[in-house]
Image (cartoon, rainbow, N blue to C red; front, side):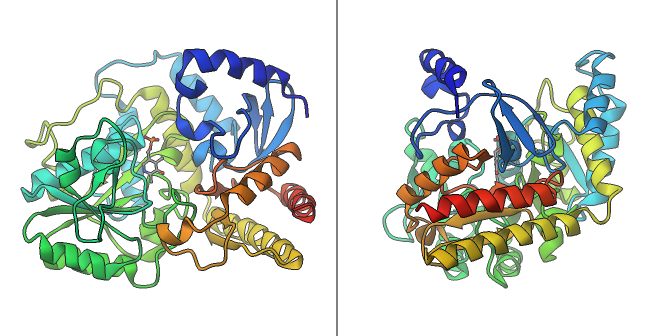
Amino acid sequence: MNTETSQKLFEEARHLMPGGVNSPVRAFKSVGGNPVFMKSASGAWLTDVDGNRYLDLINSWGPMLLGHARPEVVQAVQEAAIHSFSFGTPTSAEVEMANLIIALVPGVEMVRMVNSGTEATLSAIRVARGFTGKEKIIKFEGCYHGHGDSFLIAAGSGAMTFGVPDSQGVTNAVAKDTLTAPYNDLETVKQLLVNNPDQVAAIILEPVVGNMGLVNPEPGFLQGLRDLCDEYGVVLIFDEVMTGFRLSAAGAQGLFGVRPDLSTFGKVIGGGLPVGAYGGRREIMEKVSPSGPVYQAGTLSGNPVAMAAGITMLKLIQADPELYTRLEQKSSSIEIGISEIFSEKGLPVCVNRCGSMFTVFFCEGPVRNYTEAKKADTIRFAQYFQALLSRGVYPAPSQFEAMFISDAVGEKEIAFLLEAVRGVVKDM
Ligand SMILES: *Cc1c(COP(=O)(O)O)cnc(C)c1O
């Protein structure tokens, strides 16, 4: 595969942008080699700047639920663009968008649009703090909630201590307000609540984790958190930036039947344009400025071109009751196919999946939390990644990410993917 133009671009980019990229997940740091630069995409397929084609398993890290350049979405964006890109005044598109989100997600009674998932999560915890008058939050090891200071916190030594900064530039003062627990561990959450009486404003989590690789909530975990939040007066925040409109039209909360107090959205909600949102119970959302005392604002929030893409996405979802059944069937045959190939070879892997999100962990299962995920053999994964890439499949360049299946994937793509995996695994 000739990637000469990508190589040249990356050489140049390295001197212009930190690591040559605008977001670290795009770099190939954990798998080796240099990133491939994309030029266009249609349906399930990417084309790079050298003309190579790849079956896309990342789908812009989630947004392209229906595949790339879906004609209805492209047309809506074009039509919005000719009316100017932004006004800084309210528009009817914002009302339409809010109506759609509230209709699709039962846990959302009121919503605020923002420009990214990061903005949504950091705003949501600010509102939770304002609403409860408490300062600490509980998050789970391995869950990602964007790059807000409060979330870039690792577990301290010993499960009961305060968190420590997980990035330079995050202060110890911020870390003191973020408590961490292992995912799927209700007992530790309970201990944290008991040990920090009347201090915890919110529990935030990915209701299905995509950001340590795909990890499912164990039966009873989400409901257990709901019960603890009710008992201790804590705001339950489902970070559905990845799972929202992907696992069901009502996200993970729809799939598992547990209603959070606040939800955050991103990715699919913008159909590939920069959009985020947070929303939930009316009494909490009314605390947000200008109706309440919790300040949060945005010059380009609810941008009309971005809303046009998002509205069209959500309408396509709403109009297609079979969408998530199809995604489940396609993803299930991929999961079964991949699992069979590895087990025939006798290579131990753990394939975790929920709907159209999955991860092949290169270790024995089960993988239920970050400690178990970290047992994966990342060197083997890197081999697997490079071999798939050279066969025209573009997986996430990290063991600790989810892969996404879009509705543009059909029989032909599934056969292509399984053939590629078979070839790669044979040589491992
Ligand atoms: C992607 C992601 C974010 C951050 O969203 P950005 O748009 O990248 O800022 C937050 N939470 C979860 C669960 C995500 O997957």
